[in-house]
Length: 241
Image (tube, rainbow, N blue to C red):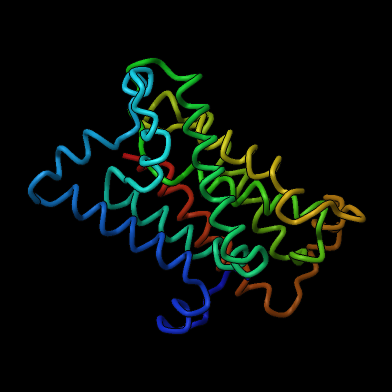
């Protein structure tokens, strides 16, 4: 579910929304990072800035979703979208996936506006991406037919590491833990609308059985996936700007 085996052409055909969002991330980052005419004006007009929102510049609740402050920030969010987005674009469909992505990002930015200081500046797609984790967690427990136990393990571990580092590291770096948390909560809360209510639930004991110490064939390759994904999460959270 999270391991991509498609070539570039197949990926773009199967997941056009993921492809389009990734291209937008890259194009806007290049436009801001390189000395193009009006690039600084564009950045100053679109970056999330609570004081400007107070003055009526409401579009700043949307535009920061597409902006990134550094190459590592761009790479982490884009790679996370490429890894975790396709499964949901396939399950939800293009329209619902895009609606979830925007809803999560906007709610995360609204929470940032309401809970952060007036002069707080922010940008990044992290809130929208955490909304994807929110709906994954809902499916893990309430719609288990959509996600296997092995993939559920990956989602829970990645989300746990992400939220802990977001909430504990916000005071040391430019990490918008508020956006991460409320992006996740929005995705979880909106899940029944997008994937429907589940008929039965799956417990943590089902996902992490006591017999996990008995390795199955292929578990080593799964461990490699875990290590790579956790490393990407840590890298991205520690390099938000």
